[in-house]
Length: 74
Image 1 (cartoon, rainbow, N blue to C red):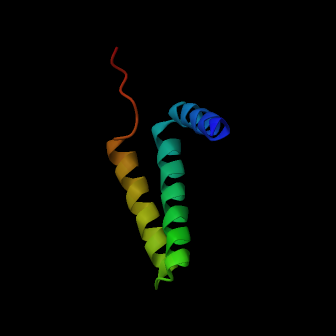
Image 2 (image 1 turned 90 degrees about the vertical axis):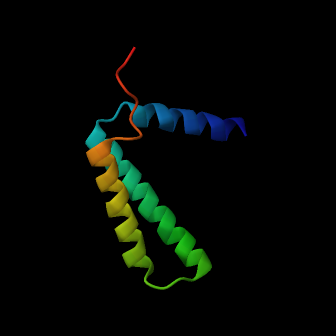
Protein backbone atom coordinates (compact mmCIF):
# COMPACT_ATOMS: atom_id res chain seq x y z
CA UNK A 1 0.00 0.00 0.00
CA UNK A 2 2.87 2.39 0.61
CA UNK A 3 3.96 2.15 -3.05
CA UNK A 4 0.48 3.23 -4.16
CA UNK A 5 0.53 6.12 -1.69
CA UNK A 6 3.96 7.26 -2.92
CA UNK A 7 2.77 7.11 -6.53
CA UNK A 8 -0.32 9.12 -5.62
CA UNK A 9 1.73 11.74 -3.76
CA UNK A 10 4.23 12.11 -6.61
CA UNK A 11 1.43 12.44 -9.16
CA UNK A 12 -0.37 14.95 -6.95
CA UNK A 13 2.76 17.09 -6.56
CA UNK A 14 3.46 16.92 -10.30
CA UNK A 15 -0.11 17.99 -11.16
CA UNK A 16 -0.08 20.89 -8.72
CA UNK A 17 2.98 22.30 -10.50
CA UNK A 18 1.14 22.41 -13.85
CA UNK A 19 -0.56 25.47 -15.29
CA UNK A 20 -4.34 25.66 -15.31
CA UNK A 21 -4.50 24.61 -18.97
CA UNK A 22 -2.18 21.63 -18.51
CA UNK A 23 -4.10 20.57 -15.41
CA UNK A 24 -7.39 20.80 -17.33
CA UNK A 25 -5.97 18.63 -20.12
CA UNK A 26 -4.78 15.98 -17.63
CA UNK A 27 -8.15 16.01 -15.88
CA UNK A 28 -10.08 15.73 -19.15
CA UNK A 29 -7.94 12.86 -20.43
CA UNK A 30 -8.12 10.93 -17.16
CA UNK A 31 -11.90 11.35 -16.91
CA UNK A 32 -12.38 10.32 -20.54
CA UNK A 33 -10.25 7.20 -20.11
CA UNK A 34 -12.07 6.37 -16.87
CA UNK A 35 -15.49 6.66 -18.49
CA UNK A 36 -14.32 4.53 -21.42
CA UNK A 37 -12.91 1.79 -19.17
CA UNK A 38 -16.00 1.64 -16.96
CA UNK A 39 -18.23 1.62 -20.03
CA UNK A 40 -16.26 -1.28 -21.52
CA UNK A 41 -16.56 -3.22 -18.27
CA UNK A 42 -20.30 -2.59 -17.99
CA UNK A 43 -21.00 -3.02 -21.70
CA UNK A 44 -22.67 0.29 -22.49
CA UNK A 45 -23.55 1.82 -25.83
CA UNK A 46 -21.93 4.83 -27.49
CA UNK A 47 -18.87 4.51 -25.26
CA UNK A 48 -16.58 6.66 -27.34
CA UNK A 49 -19.16 9.45 -27.58
CA UNK A 50 -19.77 9.35 -23.82
CA UNK A 51 -16.06 9.33 -23.01
CA UNK A 52 -15.27 12.22 -25.38
CA UNK A 53 -18.23 14.25 -24.12
CA UNK A 54 -17.26 13.78 -20.48
CA UNK A 55 -13.62 14.59 -21.23
CA UNK A 56 -14.55 17.80 -23.05
CA UNK A 57 -16.97 18.87 -20.32
CA UNK A 58 -14.45 18.30 -17.54
CA UNK A 59 -11.71 20.03 -19.53
CA UNK A 60 -13.94 23.02 -20.19
CA UNK A 61 -15.12 23.37 -16.61
CA UNK A 62 -11.62 23.10 -15.20
CA UNK A 63 -10.12 25.46 -17.75
CA UNK A 64 -12.79 28.12 -17.24
CA UNK A 65 -13.35 27.90 -13.49
CA UNK A 66 -10.18 26.19 -12.17
CA UNK A 67 -11.98 24.61 -9.23
CA UNK A 68 -9.29 22.02 -8.50
CA UNK A 69 -6.35 24.42 -8.48
CA UNK A 70 -5.11 25.67 -5.11
CA UNK A 71 -5.48 29.36 -4.44
CA UNK A 72 -2.47 31.64 -4.09
CA UNK A 73 -3.61 32.99 -0.69
CA UNK A 74 -1.30 32.72 2.21
